[in-house]
Image (cartoon, rainbow over all chains, first blue to last red; front, side):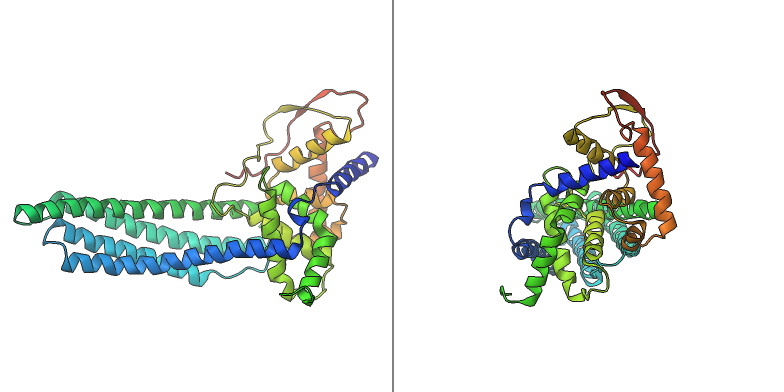
Length: 198
Length: 183
């Protein structure tokens, strides 16, 4: 027991002499800086919701009004659907973002955080599946879709198809990355729950 | 928010009185170079929770809970993984049992980082010289459960050969229960 007391005193005296680093300045100032970061993150989430719905409208409008009757028009429709999925996911995420009270005991906090992470993971799984299906349909459309008459229309159709397909695959990749992240978070919290004996 | 704001005064008081604890937790849970980010996050959570602080629990308990909950669930804002130091302890390895305090602290830190997040919290609170009751209050576990966990961790630490007094350095075999490796 004497040895353990020695280790404890080594630990306590070491951390006592630590360089204060970020806590050397006023605590309130540090909070303001971190708070600004949080506002930026909230703004980013809100922007994601707004721009997803805007791109939905843009893609649908472009498909109907601008693009010739052909593959690109169908791809625009599929892209609009993918952006709609993205927007709905982001909106649900934003609405469901509740602040967990960090002053509760660790066990209770981790259990609640895990429940929420699981909800988000299931949401991400559904939206990822939806986007994957849309991407698969897009590839089929590219292979078997109609070609417009006229050289100019055909060229526009091909160029637009390439661009829209690239954008659609980018959305699919972003969804997959988002799902992987939510899965990792959920797994991490599950591991903590197991350690807590839940 | 002005300097006369009672919330700011209370917040500064809490930070000043508990800065060592906050730093210890941030250094234990964040990789090198990221402890200041985690510190900021802990301070932010303390600020946001301040309205609900009514003194029902001791200030240190309140701070420990917030700091640990924040550290356990913390992820960098650019979403990179946070746990590069977590190493599985089921592999035997050799450690030197140091005699000087500086090296002893490194051994403690290495041992802590090799533990899972919850074991790390419990052992850190034990090193902070808290009673089993206080640790149970912070973690939400029963006192008996805390006692069992701490005994297991102490035994694991002793098996490293560092829990004994050594006149000279010698290498010891290490083999302890595998923690949850966070990937």
